[in-house]
Structure formats: C-alpha cells, structure tokens
Amino acid sequence: MATLTEQIYEKIRQDIYMLRLPDHEFLTETALADRYQVSKAPVREALYRLCREGLMVSYPRRGYRIAMISEEEYEEIRRIRYLNECAAVDLLLKKADRPALEAIAEAAEHTGDVGGNMKFHMSLAAAADNPVLTDIIDRLVTSLARSVSMLKRAGQGRIPVYHQEIAAALMKGDAKSAKEYLKKDIGIEEESRNEDY
Image 1 (cartoon, rainbow, N blue to C red):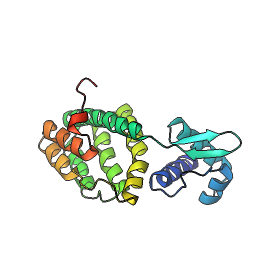
Image 2 (cartoon, rainbow, N blue to C red):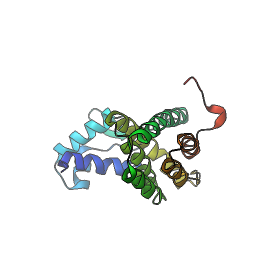
Image 3 (cartoon, rainbow, N blue to C red):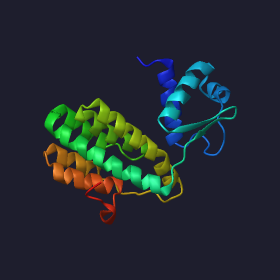
Image 4 (cartoon, rainbow, N blue to C red):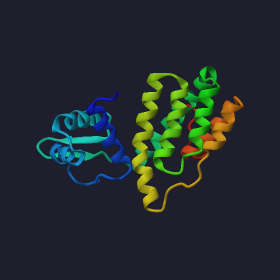
C-alpha cells in the first residue's frame, strides 16, 4: 500500500501533466497541503522528490514552480525516450509472456488522452521487466506529458497514435515494425534521427 507521501506525489504529478496546476505561479507547501487536505510534511517530501526528478523547481522562501522545458529540450527528450522504449521492446520480446502482451494490447485500446497514452507506454516499460529502464521511461514520459497536454489544449497536439499497431507488431514478435510505429507515435522525424546517438 502506498504511503501518504507517495499518494500526494502521484496526485501532484498527475495535476502537473493534466494542467491542473498553474504554470507561472509559485506553489507553496501550505497551499498544496490545503488542496490535498493533508499536513505539510507529505507535501514537502513529495515536492522534494519532484524537484529531484526535474518536474518542479524550488525557490527558497518563495515556493515551487513547475519546471518548463524548451523546444530543444522537448525534441531531445523525445529522441532519448525513443531509444529507451526501443530497448524496452527488445527486452519485452525476450521476456514477456502472453498475458503481458495482452495487457499491452488492452492498454492500446484506451489511449484517447494523455493519461491513457502514458499508461500504454508504461505498459511497454513494465513488460520489459527491468526496473531501471522502467524508471527512466517513466521520467521521460512524464516530462513530456505536460508539454503534450499544453499542445492539445492549444489545438496543436499531434492526433495520430500508433498504439494498436505497436501492440499488434509485438504480438507477432516483430520488433522492427514495433519500433517503426513507435517512432511515428513519439513523433520522431526521419530527418532528425541520428544513428550514432
């Protein structure tokens, strides 16, 4: 069972990428404790973890702000995410059993929003059964989720998703096709791909 700090961490993280917290305002421990109806201690610990992960920035005596990423950082994170998810594809095809592949296919059916998208990509990471890789992918997916939500809100979000195609390729054991659809899904442009990366 998750501790109170872990629950608050997840709530704040969800509120960050679902755009429920303001971008350019300082957030205080007191205000967040009131928001989640808890004491300041679990909020403080959750904020400390979010700062370590790069999702929040601490400003002494002022509060916390959500970390924003530049367009260059956004593209860089997408490329790094693609490489790590390709590693997950290779691992999961060596390790995953039929139920794990079916869980990925099930997740592919429910990807109409940012939360569903995250759940699908994290199902790939989980099936790879490598805690370090899962943690890396979780951080990369989360760091982009807020930007994707902001683009969608502005009507600029990339509409095509290829989750069902990725899942179908994995069910066939076709790593090459899965990775090609993954590249399209993450939005990696062919001309920006660096083979030596």
